[in-house]
Length: 635
Ligand code: SF4
Image 1: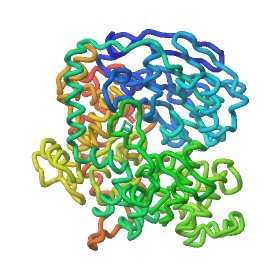
Image 2: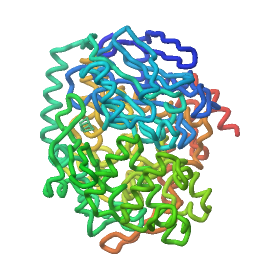
Image 3: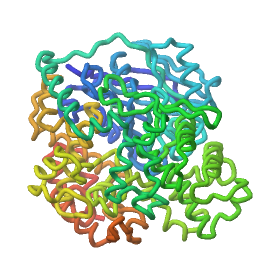
């Protein structure tokens, strides 16, 4: 096999067993790589009734098909598990060097099943794999645990770790690679915590990845590099980091502030990449291994005892910035660092804190004034910092907040669920979906919940020539780019879903395929053929993407999801938002239903239930899911 080793490393923590399995080439042919192959494995290995914190839940960690080759921006690692936040299948993605080193150790995928009795970590050095005690690492934050492990195993190793939040089963605990890269969403860190697994250490490795047609591959790689350097969005991201998006979203009234009550903000600039650069917070660029975009930022502040960290990314800049009324950049950098080292998802964290602030404003949670020693009012960063500590320690109100918005609002007062901006158990990502309608449809359908790292439909803004061209290619109408428009959204979402599935599976960063536009499906198919020797063209490759998306839908169907769950948070569907120009937007049930009806029709899924139809499943080679679909359709 070329570009993949065809090897899965299985680790059973309950029985202290480790074994290696070879997977057949057909899996690579049909499911492209990490995300697709792991979805196929999840179908076989994770029982639909498994509780997310039970030993039966399996965490799978997979490096992309192009990862380990010299391809730039192709080092993303996919993590798959049943989420404690959503209660269903969840796919996460993380940057850093972990996937690269995993491939260099000769493995494509790791599975973690069972649960250890005492804290452990796994050490991988080629075919030497060991489960080791981690008592001395447990309760360490991610940074200090990483430093300790690097001292122990040598500076060439890399780590995948959980922080105290994962150990305490906070439902939005992240899994961190190389300290600051996070598979943030869905509570994967808590699943590892439930297995008492502090993390995995991978050595430098000594197994090179072989390419089927190196000459062709390197030729195409040059094209990728040149496309990246020409792409407007990627050039801006390289210069200012992902927080360059703040001002562009502010200008289109799609920047959610004050818990999704104001889509622009007069202080937005203080949460922006431009401001971090101008005011000297930014001291350098950082990136995942081999990436030439290097979108991460190395930042510093002398306040809070001195903070030297990576980030904040755009999502964090807004979630812990305008979302909680915070224009204090020093506090933002500090909170970002706390979330990083505690292993907390900043999007969910920000969603929880803004809900607390709005609840307090509306007369709920008044006891917090005493518990926090300060009032949790908008922009009160002291209160926000105290809440972070309480959540990670499950102390007082923190114990309720650690369960995530869906649970917390019910416990505090069901009335507060109206401004708990979540759906399907996941807190909403940082874009105003009432205004950006492709995002609205994508978020409603997303297996993860209302989140961007599954179907990033950035092109709908039409802010670059690449974006406009893509919208024109997908819908036939260049003028359908832009906010507030519903035309062509099902077609736009479908392409992005399929493309994202392929992007994840080969290990590419979505920035270069669906946020920037350096690699399209035509170039991707040529790359795949050159790398693996498996013939693909754009059409067959996108069909593979569709197969992955449809299989994931079937996994969710088996776990109980139906069309009624394809929805957005209450606030997004019931409370109109006013743009800077005074125009009002909401995603009404009627509007969403219209987009969903068309989407299901185009997909070949049953419009009433949202279950893929048996003939579609057979056409995609997903015969093994037909029984489940037929049963669901009969209900
Ligand atoms: S663009 Fe950013 S997230 Fe993507 S691979 Fe490069 S550094 Fe990592």
